[in-house]
Image 1 (cartoon, rainbow, N blue to C red):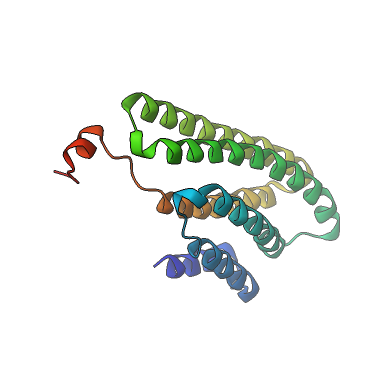
Image 2: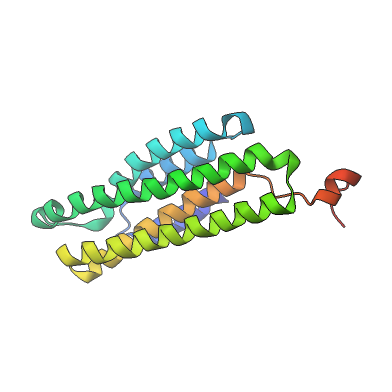
Length: 184
């Protein structure tokens, strides 16, 4: 299902059905879907995935942005700045995931509230970085190409987020743990 959805997304990303891009996205999806994250390996698996995905994102952006030589010379330094800023946000997100994994078995309402508030703050920080760099890229590229960058990044970041979220179990209510129940 994930692969068929990614195939559909790749067709929408490119205007001309670029097979190179589809292969790159499918490779990234396979890479992501092959990461079976156990709690003891959460951090190392996510770090490996982040490194590999960063490489794939550059290839995908190269294929989808359709930049001239002059545009590329202006775009890539801004992209590298964006990548550094985004990685700082993802480091915060990783911290939330680490704390979630560490507290999963002993989750309380207080810890759950702290974790979700931190997750909301990370999401807001990511949006702020995306907005800031859309504007910076729109200063050196036509707005339509800056918008394309924002669209591709948004799709890729959502795919990564979905993969990470699919590997983490839902919070279990305290009373369900105590009673050994699994639902209503």
